[in-house]
Length: 554
Image (tube, rainbow, N blue to C red; front, top):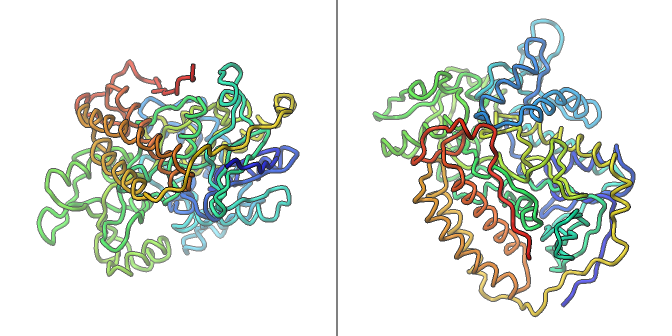
């Protein structure tokens, strides 16, 4: 069966999180033509919506770009691209103004918390781990939800933006894919599965922007939503784009530890308000421990804190650590962290009286599709933005709340690059029809257990062997398992009609292998990558990215 439906748009955006919606809106402002957003769930089914902390941005006269950059570079472990990081940081204030004045995003002010004394209303700026200044704009503890809400509303009002929900991108359409060549590669769009009908549509476009977010679901324990399956990185890799620094996967130190709740994040902003991490070495007695690991104690960068908690849990055999906020009043905590307070209270934990049980969990990929600061991948017409991309902003460890900054800045820079190259993109557009998706002799599968089994196995061995602390032996074990699973998936993929579950499994497996391969190539410990066989940082690798690229099919 061959699906013949072909749709044409000037610009295709894959993903509907903050980076995807920002891309569509900035393209509508900068470039002519029609824009399509494809998203595999509802428009608000995204990881961005779960972000609690906020957006790191210099908006206070007591702060500076230089200080924000300094904190970013320090957290990044001498692996950040200094120039790209500075460009993104400097572009922040203008993008915040765009959000608040044009899009209608609301950030919490001091007056709303009853803390203003100057008579004028100012943003309530939070502080998080690794920051030496208060510079985090937030909307209570639901910042991602608020920004996502305002961006969705703006997209819905724009007649040039068309949203295709329950559509999952399968593969990019490139010149190399069709002609088996690598010179001057061009992206022409993507094959997209309509989940409701089971048909695969051809989306043709002058530009394709990948904004599919991260890949936290590659790990057993994660605060990511179920959509975070590494689709953008996997598709770009299959399209022969370079993938960089996938070994640097950030584990958030504080996921809520409770049998009735999974994937609920306890924001780093609590530690910014003086929260301290403790262990219960003796029943009923909570003892601080971060002073043994870093001079910033509980406000140390995330990689340090996650490893410290992991070390204490393994050393003591305790199931969790604790985050103590009992120095703050219940009134303050209810107002500043309404969702976190409500969730914990529902579980019988009054965080004003009792420390919060926490454990580390997979959170953010600092690696991704290697791009310029404007998201350009090197393949004409193909861009990657947000967590899918690797610009060098995060280096070996993302500074807290720089991720949301990236999601609103990169799309603006990408749209400007696209606008400047539209004439060349139009000349490169093929006049010939693009081959429709072909399922060949595939049949419907009656063994879906194969998909669920492989999915579970990948997530478990990634957690056990490629987690917070790695060794060469663990990585070798993981590599052997992923190679076997990849062979099974490849056979299954071409024997049976594709489903959204199979597409996601294929992407998870590809992403897992990229993380393993990258980790095996880096013979040192730096930032989020800690290999017990190479416990020290190698100065010769300062500024050296780990790049993996799929070989061309010759």
